[in-house]
Image (tube, rainbow, N blue to C red; front, side):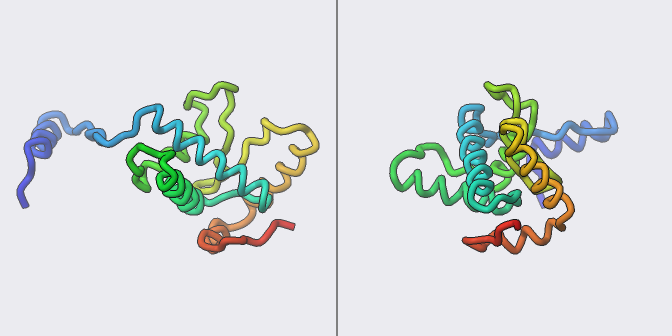
Length: 160
C-alpha cells in the first residue's frame, strides 16, 4: 500500500509531536447549501410530527430528504450537487444545534437521544407544548430500534 504525500506528512507530524491534526474534508457544503439541507430537514421533522405525532429517526430523515432533493432536481429546482449521506447526517445535527445561525434564536428541531429528532417545543403554544412533552417522554422511553422498523414504512403507526 502506497501512501500519498499528505498521509506521509501526517505520519511525520505524529512521530515528531505525538499527534496529527485530522485533515478536513474538501467536499464540505457552503453555509448556503447547508442551510438548504437544514430547511428540508426541518420540513421533514415537522411533517412527521404533523402526520404521525412522533419523533423521527435520522435514517428516515435522510431517506425523506433524498426523496425531496431528487424530486426537486427532476423539476429543475435543485442545481447543487446531491449531498452524501454523511453530509446530510451532519446537517441534521446542525439543525438541532444552538450553534447554527437561526433568525429566531432557537433551533427548530431538537435531538431527543442519538439519532432521534423532534420539533422544538419552545416554538409552540402552551396547549400544544403539554402534548409535545408527553410525546417526548414516550419517545425517550421507547427503544430506538422500534423507530428503525418505520424507516421504510410509508405509513408508520400513530402514537396513541
